[in-house]
Length: 118
Length: 118
Image (cartoon, rainbow over all chains, first blue to last red; front, side, top):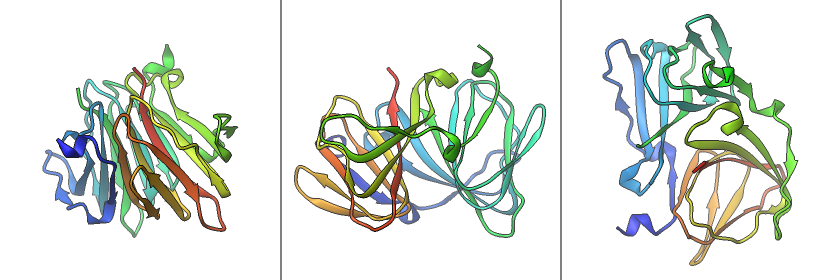
């Protein structure tokens, strides 16, 4: 595949936003920016956007997240606590840790979320 | 290890910046934000900053990069062309593709760069 050999440059804003349909997600979209379709062999880049009052479901899974906040004001709810999040914060969610993200601002809350492909 | 089980929240600005000492790197620092030390099993998050006129070396390697531009004006030099980069651009550098990044603005040029750990 050509996409496996060429460098890809992709303005994230041009990637179509899809509604997150997981149970418990409200006002959430995902942009699948770099995935196996683009030739990524090991991990994927996705951009999530939560509308004001939007949130992802409280859930856990057997793979990790690596997250970077790019816009807005949010909170991360863990098993133990609720932590405010801002631009420039990085988050490591290890496998099986309960987590959900909520927008607590008046603008969109946006973050990158990387996951393993295998 | 406890760090493998707890969610980690880390303002990237608080991660120490280390000089990039690779031959051909000028005015470049790296912040190792999420690595195997933090319990990451598959891939690492690093934050690079290039000072004005700074650049990374033109190089290639057998693993991929997934990159996201978070600040400033840069260019990506590939084997074929020189492409301007701005906030919000995502880049997939497949294994073995020649690449280097340069700051062509008057402010720092900053990007996240993810690499596989294995």
